[in-house]
Amino acid sequence: MKQRSPHTLYAYWNELRAGRLAPRRLEVEPSRIAGILSETFMLERVNARDYQYRLAGTRLCELFGAELRCNNFLTDWPDTDQALLAHQLTLVCERGAVLALEIEAKASARHVLAFEAILLPLLHAGDTIGRIIGAMSLTSPTPMLGAERPLLRRLIKHEVIWPDGRPHAMLERGGATVPSPITAQLQPAPKAGRPRLRVLDGGRTFWKPGSR
Image 1 (cartoon, rainbow, N blue to C red):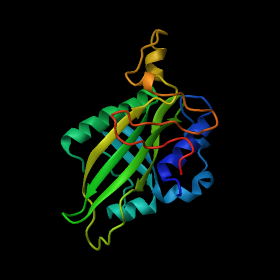
Image 2: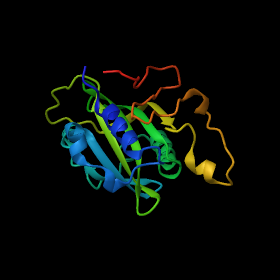
Image 3: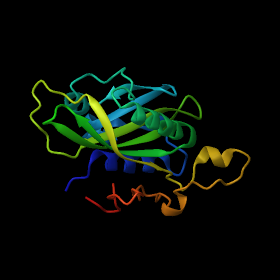
């Protein structure tokens, strides 16, 4: 079975960063991920509550029934999910975390779409993480939506992942190691770019090494 876009993007991002906190935005070559561009997006962190779509693939815009560019990623979520996502996106931008999500988007009582997504930090303007690159794939059957489009989104599962086994910014403060609650359950990401990402709450695995 063909790998979903989040898996493909993570492998490319991990290879590109080559052990660094994150790759630089200008290092990303669209031609290297041409097969998943329609499900890829890029966010700009404007402030702690505003993550604007700079780019959004045609497949995502089609499924959500709108041009996502210039919209806030945190729009159209319940308040509790919005607050949680804002906190986790801060970890992506300030500590180099990776965010894996399972999302439900409801178009109507009859049409509920399920997605998997991943959000990855990119260095921009020096050594600041000001961009996030992500990918989102539909995991449920594609319905005939007609004029209906999913509006309200809901988090089904979420996981903050430290690709190198620890939060970078915390280590840099004073040079002391501050363990992450999930560090002991994660393996460092292999240099070759094959991810070892797991859901830690007993749910199903997002990706396994060598999975298809």
